[in-house]
Length: 341
Image (cartoon, rainbow, N blue to C red):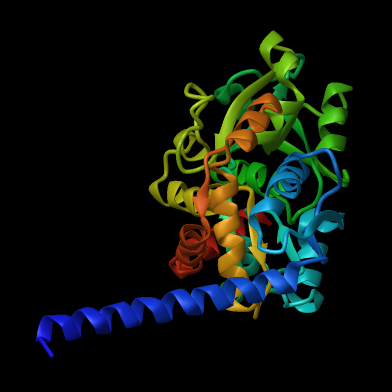
């Protein structure tokens, strides 16, 4: 037999085997999910950006997952997402029936506070991120300080949920590394509560995901009642081009690196996460469904109507971002630990 013909037949056989294997995997995933519920677990109450994105996923991902499972949302608020994340890692099913949407600070909590962050992100699998999440520091109009320099000279009361949340940790970094005169008042159950407290004049400044601010407080921000003064992230959000990043308002080079490390989770953003040991074919199917969802015309139109930012990152890329954070030099990690206390 001609050598080229043999090579062609061999190649065709390999392709056929690959297609058969792919078909079996697809069929297996479809059989598994058909007639089942798929739960998206959240560590926050309804009403914030976690909830907004999770409900978009529930609404549109179903049709792209083989077997078309019914997708439901489970809110497990507590400890700024820590309680739900620890439960998810240790006790949630590993079979692909439960996934999650947790804070972008998950990796940082694991590194900085291992006694609290009782999980290993490297053992879990990111499915994909809907959008990066820069945190917006928003000041009420009547606050005693208005500019960056005034914030170092006049005390501002900062509202926060708990010491494990960015609402505490980011302002704490600025207090220690930037000389900002912040008085931290924690104990609010979530962003909705401490933002309401600011609107009532109980606190002067709060930080929360810009993805949420742009949806829930469009009018008071436009009118100047609420003023974005800082943001956390590795690059400025395109909607906040004139609002400085945290690392831009400190002068010490090491302080800048510490803040950049602490802010790196912004690139993870609002991301869906699968538990450890999820079967590879189901993870692949979920990642494929996510990638198709964020390109879906109706999904994008609905997100625009709901004022949700969509700037997706694939699951594999998000996993790399998380791994890069985990490999941060120890002196930078230690500097962040000290500054966030």
